[in-house]
Length: 513
Image 1 (spheres, helix red, strand yellow):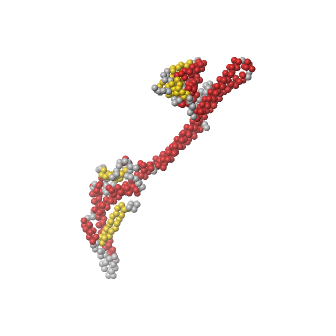
Image 2 (cartoon, rainbow, N blue to C red):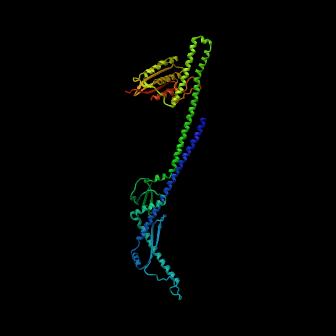
Image 3 (cartoon, rainbow, N blue to C red):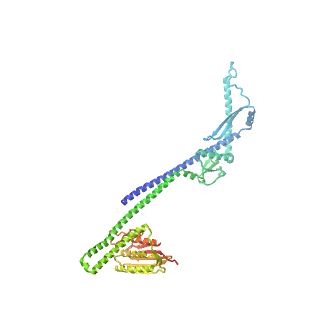
């Protein structure tokens, strides 16, 4: 699959996931706003109903208290001698609970002399029309009396009630009941706290279990809407669990949101794996190309040497025969070494390398490698400088693998030397707390910064176009990194393009004094 196709699919799928995530977040936000509005509206209706209940309670109290002493006596007399008619008017809540009731009682001291119906043959004074007019006059007088009584109560409420302290106008326990029943009737079954503020802004009452938690989102409601604004008392209600109550209604959306985020992360990780696998495929293709060129030369050399051995003239010359045999032997070793590298890296992928650890003097080991490698460096008019200054050179390591590490790093310096400059290799050792430090520095072509972090990856080689003048599989530095890691050490590279490259190794000391 082309890289551009992967990018297009990734962008389309990523945009789709992000759009889905945005829509879910937007839906949750809109749903929370709607629930807040519903909650606010329900609380306002409940407080308005509580305010009306308080007003009705005050009106009922004024009606009871306004009965004059004469009426009381007349009432008492009617209880003994008169005829009493009682009519009850009740106010009920939607759930059937009686919130308030008023009784209307009418009485007369003597039984009415008016007959139910009387027909006189002589058309005397007690005829049906006259009886009807008498009943109508009596009802009219009763109406005027009751209206005057109500008017008197209303005038007293208008001119006197507003001047009374709020404590005398309200029964706070009843107010609590009105608020609670109003909230339940409007679908809000939630713990609440309230307090009452009088017309002077003074707090006159708060519920017994009052708490300030959630008071930043309180609801205010005037208790007596007909009072002048300057003399109006207010009840303030707040809900400690309001936020949890609102968000509990959208909790069913949380799993969906989490699954969408998980899918998005999984998709991003999948795209990352696809690109990584594509990169590994390209690196393996480069490896196959490099391996082909790396094996081609020794195979061609061996084939040519074998053809020369068939020449009778070669058989007659022992010197020539020995030279050709040496070439075949060297090229065979070269092939075997490259195959061993591939097999070793394959083994490292499956399990940790088996190391034969023993005490080593790093200075002596490096000095031996330098002496062996000096001939190859001198062949390119180069030189090796050593500064083995480590006072504590003893380490616990595998001699063969550590030797191969030093050899690989020096060999890379020879491979990537500059053509216009003689090679100079500088090998140093020194000590840091608990560590033996080894550095191998050259004056070669250097490495670009963007490639510096990748040089220890398996099969990775810095691109040099289509040139294959530098042989290798891209396994050398990966092998070095693996061996140093298995020795519980670290390795890093520092480089400046066309100036120098330095590899710094840190290995734990055998003894830390």
